[in-house]
Length: 277
Image (cartoon, one colour):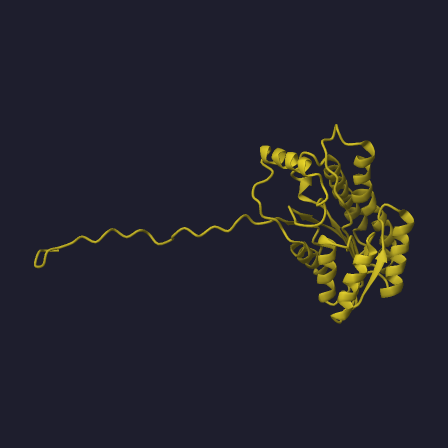
């Protein structure tokens, strides 16, 4: 059985599309011609972005989506498909951030991070994968983090959740082999988004100081959400039969002026008129 080209129309559901990476990804995919369903708890923000896409000539719908609730996930998938048709692409990027030293965080706050980032991603996968497998095609992109490779103090729950996502996707990739459905990971480095902007300032300062102590704050430059949207676009645009399993995206350090590449010339020697050179 041969791989078939992507269909001309590839509807997308983006989870976590009310701001940040999810919103930027929805806008980028819509600009590329994908019908896009924007899902999040803040559905009014998704609706505003969907209206913007439609005003620009695209096709979009907003759906209420709470990835910590089984019924909400199933209802969001149903609503997205009713509005746009069978989903060809799903981006699992919903999440929030709570920080604290592991021995100080309340257990329910710690567990909530696992629920939203890991179990929420699984709920979404479970809701969309069977139909994709039946059609023998589809892309599911999971937003992970570089904290998997470089864990950071004050983020034990977030790190544990993202490590879990990567383990889940490694297993999923094996299970999907031969189905035509692809699962991939995008690993952002430090990115300017709304996630974590409501954190306590003193806690944040203490956290950053610990990061510095362990060499985890190499420079102050951050990625933009649009950088990650480009990575998602590259992954899902791969032709069938090829699989971009993971993309690591990191912010470049500050650009410095280049050093001169022209060797220094010796100072000219002064000669008196008529003297031999």
